[in-house]
Every structure is written in structure tokens, then in C-alpha cells.
Amino acid sequence: MQKRSLARQISMRITIAQLVLPVLAVLLVSAIPAAAQPDWRFFAGFSDLRFESGTGHENAAGWGGAITQYISTARWFGATAEVSGVYKTYAPDIHTSFYGVMLGPSFAYRKNPNIEPFVHALFGWAGNTSNTGAKSVWVFGYALGGGADFKISKLLAVRGQADFVRTSFPDGYNDRQNNIRVLGGLVLRFAK
Image (cartoon, rainbow, N blue to C red; front, top):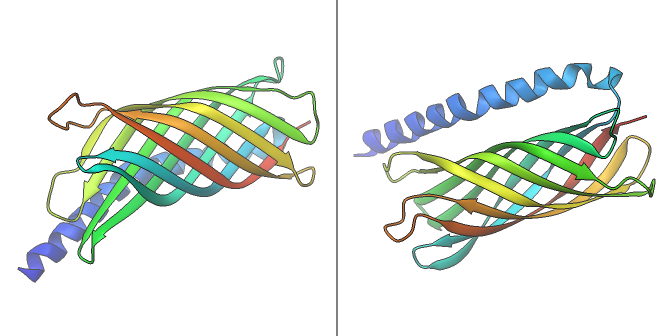
């Protein structure tokens, strides 16, 4: 029984790696020319997701990362690619993971050089995995929200962000979950 459980855990980790690592690789490769290009934002930080479950609302904590490039001709408009993961432990031996991979437009207000508020609409996939032997499920999801970057120096800012996240995991009811996500962390800014 233990060997089967260990095999399932290894299989689940390999599946997660096969899904998440290619996205991270693309994000990293796209980051290479960033130092030469103006108006890039690289975010990395912590994430807290308040999500709907069969027993009500629960919280899960994890990480989030995003890359945004603003278009030089319209410095207020850009595109964002975002990945995130949060984790929940229900008992010492029951763990669930939620992942998101989303893309979409971003809009920034850039009149104040020290505070840069933004909004975005991100669309993509949300995944749910568990160590209980249940199959991983990936569904359509989207995030609507925004936040603000608070300048620390020319290259560094602190970000606060909140999003409404809609997922469509099968739940036997209406297959829609309304979730709230809060992120905070640091932003590397490569701008004019």
C-alpha cells in the first residue's frame, strides 16, 4: 500500500512538472531580452486564495509570478503572463494543490512616478491535483482584478494585488467557483 501511494505521489509530481515547467521555461526565455527592452515588469511573491469547496469557503497559501510588457507606443497598455500555485492540507496525509496559468491584457495608470496602479483581465487554465489518487483536473478559468506597484527604487517596487478568480471545476452543482485571490511581493522594473 505504501509503495502504491509513493508511486502516485511521484506520478503526480511528474505530471505537475510536465505542465508547469514548460510555462516557466517560456517565461524565463522571454525574460532574457528584457534588460534591453523598455517597460517590462517581473513580479514574484506570495499568494492567498479564498476558494469555494464542498464544505464552504477555505483558504490556501502559495506563490505567484507574472511578466508584463507594456507597449512602447501606448505605455498604459500591455500584456501579462501569470503562473501561480496554492496548497491546502486537510489532514496530515491529504494534500491538494491548485495551479493557474493565465494570459491577458493589462492597463496601467502612469501619471505618478512613485505609484503605478493597474488592472488586468487574465484568461487561461486552472488545475487541481491531490495526493489521494484522484486524477488531476484542468479547466478554463479567468482572473479579473488589479493592484498597485509602489516604487522603492528605479528597478524595484512592492506590489499589492487582488483578483476575482472564476474556475469551472466539476462540482455536481453548477461547475462554477467564485474565488478571491490576494498577492503581494516584489517587482523588478525595466522601464524608460
